[in-house]
Amino acid sequence: MDNSGTAIGSAVMEHRDTVPGQRFLLRIADLTVEVTWDEGISNPRVKGSKERFIVHEGAPDVRISVVRGALSEALMGRKLFDAGPAWQLYQYNGSYLFSFKSVDFGSHPYEIAVFNQDFSKGEIYLHPDFLKPGQPVDPLWPPLDELLYINLLAKGKGVEIHACGLIDSEGLGHLFVGKSGAGKTTMAKLWEGVQGVTVLSDDRIILRQLGDKIWMYGTPWHGEGGMSVASKAPLSRIYFLQKAENNELLPMKEAEAAARLTACSFPPYYNREAMEFTLGFLSKVVKEALCYELRVLPDKRVIEFISAHYYFLNRGWVS
Image 1: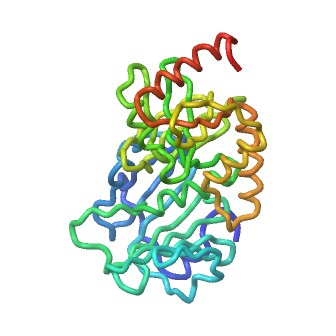
Image 2 (image 1 turned 45 degrees about the horizontal axis):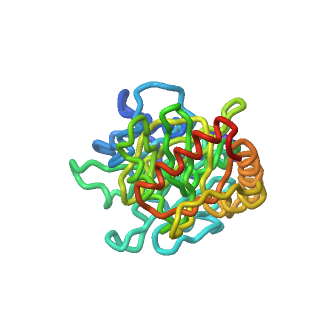
């Protein structure tokens, strides 16, 4: 299979022409996905926080067509990854095929998404039994939306990080990294409402290199705080969260910072080339940003603590 399209669709069903205007554009981290659909799909639209990332113009990086139909499980090929009952990933003739099931829907997939090798083109098949007359449907319903971007980023474009991110009053980005329970949402809530500060997300941030800078982006995949902003900032500092009795900021060596950043990233572990890119990219990230372990007592005092360190560091009074 070449990268001009997917290999399975033509063998399964005949596509109908898309009616003009039946499309939407989703832009996350300056990567735009165009979704079009045929007449068999009524009122597709994104839901939830993704609505903040809808745009009305721009050249797509990914083109996806949505059709009404079912794929035979016999065509799914070799299994690459099994996420349990929710979804599985297969490889078929060079295509990547995601199969999604739900206990509420039955034993057969309610949705199957097929992408070419570089994730620039795809087809989404929605099972007819899953489509209710007149009921809106999100063809990029989680976790497909995030899986698409994770795999697209891994093609040399960036990495998604388990982190809270904010933009300070000078327009610089601060990344607070940690696994579940580390205090990312708590940190985001503490900074929310601080004058001049924008919280990009309380749980997922995308890092990309554009030109000579590493940029951090808000995503729609928020945590319990529900914070999600379609904006970006150049990355300035990375803080690895560690709960403590007192606030303390400890500079980190690049190797340790890269290892901890990798542990909180979301690369496609089933793809060797993607993993090699991710490791190389994150090694570059920790060279470009100042990295600290932030031992934190999660209350408002941490804002003054970080702000004071930032002020004195910028003037060369601390290291």
